[in-house]
Amino acid sequence: MQHPQHHARNRPEKLACILADSGEAMDYAELNAESNRLAQLFYQRGLRPGDHIAYQMENSCRFLQLAWAAQRSGLIFTPLHSHLRPAEVAYILANSGARLFVCSQRFVDTAQRLDRRALAVEHWFVSGADAEGFDSLEGAMAGCAAEPLAEQCAGIAMLYSSGTTGQPKGIKPSLPEQRFDELPEIMLGIAGFLGIGGESVYLAPAPLYHAAPLHSVMAALALGATVVIMDGFDAELSLVAIEKYRVDCSQWVPIMFIRLLKLGQERRDNYDTSSLKVATHAAAPCPPEVKRKMIEWWGPIINEYYAASEGIGLTAIDSEQWLTHPGSVGKALMGEVHIVDDQGDDVPPGEVGMIYFSGFGDFEYHNEPEKTAGAHHAKGWATVGDMGYVDEEGYLYLADRRDFMIISGGVNIYPQEVENVLIAHPDVADVAVFGLPDDEFGERVVAVVQAEAGVPANDELSERLRSWCR
Image: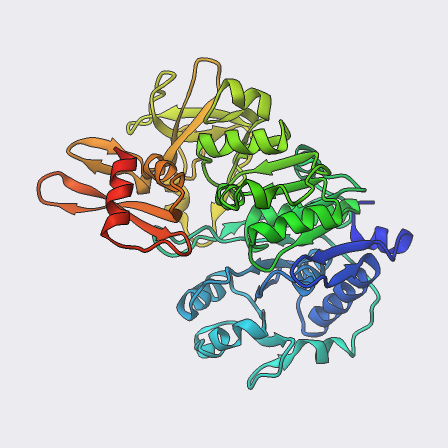
């Protein structure tokens, strides 16, 4: 069986989760018992399979207990982004129809500013604190048995895409058809690609409200692995965790690689990362020079995939393939890739167009029929709005999101390319590039730069960066 319940029965004292920041740990017995208590609480409050819950909290053991409680209760659950403001939280709660909401102490202020009269939420809980207008989650759980529900069935996450071009869109799932204690085949395949097995120690340094960290961590726990999570990414702490817990597989985003490299050779050499067997990255294009340096440091163990929360397809590439196709995100592993122009026609290899997938999965945005239709081709193919091209061998290369593209003087400019150049400068900690209106060119390219600690953000830095770009 592929479920924490099985591992709690057979290896109760095995660590399920470790929080790298504090060393707090949870074994499989606790994960199973606490998720059972939460499932019992949900049932007592009248929730039944197909109902919706939402919660906003930092990466923690409680976060995962809530996810598994919903998963074994047949509920649809939405973890909320930690940076959402009250109006954004309210929108998602209303759009999803959530009946129960939980926040941690860190997010009480946001939750208390919500207009509850406009929401369908019936049950409001706070975890780890007392707050006016909220029930104590721990107090309510104390009266619940640590036994499974009489009838358990599989629940599923409903995640919201980023709201960069409007309100966030809920990616509507269907309740799984398989047993609650069986992983879908796609999750088994992804776990294998990430190098996760029952004896793995898997580092997930990203926020769990994102699709890739959430699904991979839940797959790891279903298989009986130990997961190491972080309450906010810290480059040096991630190296400490790799050495201390002998991490053998991990998943990253490119900005994490960038910050790891900017620690400098001397600090990086202080840590033993030899336990790593697979390091996977995704979620954004990785500057080629950054990836090349990571392969030189960790060896040819770095895999990459391109996918989306909508689950329409996936491409993948390993280090050896990437070194002969630098910049690529690989060939299609799930589904078939199509590159089309503005008229919806296929374009030849090497030409940039909209990326569509067919033959794998489909989706709809919850209560958003127009946005769902806008994400589909006349032939039924699906897209999330990314631009790219394929080469003659079928390797996919990303350009940028269509909505991010800058048109200046009639020329298409992809912000990601400019960001890739600027982020490589030693004085730059982070950067965002976008277009602003320009009377002559239509749009002009603007970069907002966060300087590294100790670097004066002045005109001299601006000129250094302009010279670097030239």
